[in-house]
Image (cartoon, rainbow, N blue to C red):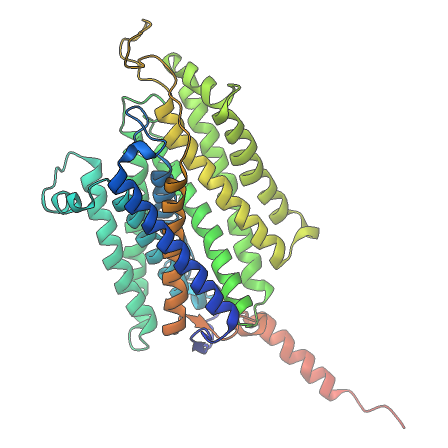
Length: 421
C-alpha cells in the first residue's frame, strides 16, 4: 500500500463530561483495588480463597492476563513498522501506549499479591538464571525500555522514518516475553496440567487474541467519546485479525489437551478439566470456547453482523473468555492434586490425592480489577496529555484507494451539466 500523508494528531478533549466521568470511575476502581491489597496484606491471605494447595489465585489470573495482553496490544504497531502495512501506522502510538499500560497494570497486581512487595528488591538484585521467574523479570523490565524507545521514534518527526529498527527489535522482544510467560507453566513438571511444550505457542496466540481485543475496545471508546471520524477500513482489518487470533487460540488450546491426553499418565487431568461435571469443564466449554470463541467468531465472520457495535461486543466477549482460559490454566492446574507416587493412591491429613477447592474472594477480584483500571487510566491520561491519536481515521484519510475514489466521484459530479430550468 502507498505511504499515507501526514495525519494530524491531537490530544483527547479532556473537558468532555464522558471523559471526566471515565477517569473518575477508573480512579475509584484503582483506589478500591489498592484498598483490597492493603486489606489482604494486613489481614493475611487467610481472607482470600487461596490455600496451601492453591497458592496462585485470582490476582494471578488478572496479572497474567494483563501481561500476556500487553504483548499482543503491540501487534498493531508491529504490523505497521515490521511488516510495512501503512494502514496500521496511524494507530501505532496508541498500540505502544496500551502495551506499556497493560504491562504496568499486570505487574502492579502481581507485586501487590506477593504478600511482601518489598521482597521484589531481592528478586531484582539477586538473579538465579536457572529460574524462569528471574528471566521474566529481565524480559518485563526490558519490554518497558524497548517500547519506550520505539514510541519515542514514532512520535519524533525527525526519527519517525527510522522507527522500523526499534519496531523490529520490540517485535522480537515481545515474542520472547510471551514465550517466557508461557514457559513458567510449561517448565513446571510437577503439575500435570502445566508441563507442555505447547504452552509457549499457546501463550503467543493468547497474547495476540487478548491484546487485539483490548486494543479494539480502547480505540472504539476513544473515538466514540471524542466524536472523531472512524471509518470501516481499519475496523474491518482489525475484525479479520481478531477472528484469526481467536481461532488460533482455540486450536492451540484444544491441541494442548489432545497432546496431554495422548500421554497415559495425564488422561485423568484432561478428563477432570474438560469432561468432569464440575466447575472447570463448564468454564472451558461454556465460557472459554462458547462465550469467548464461538460467539466472537460468529460476530466477526457473519457479514450481516458487522458493525462497530458488534465488533466492540465481540472484543468484550474475547476478554471474558480469555480471563476464563487463564483461570482454567492457573487455578485448574493447581486444583488437580500432585502425583507423588505414580501408580499408587495417596491419602493423608495434608489433602494429598484430593482435588483442591478454590472460591475467589472479593478482595482478590477487586485487586485484579484495580490492575485493569490502572492500565486504562494510564491510557486515558496519556491520550489527554500527548498526541497519540489521529484527529480522523475516516476511510479517505487512511486508504489511498478510498481517497482516489472519492476524488473521482467529486470530479464526475462537478463535470455533470446543470439541469435545464
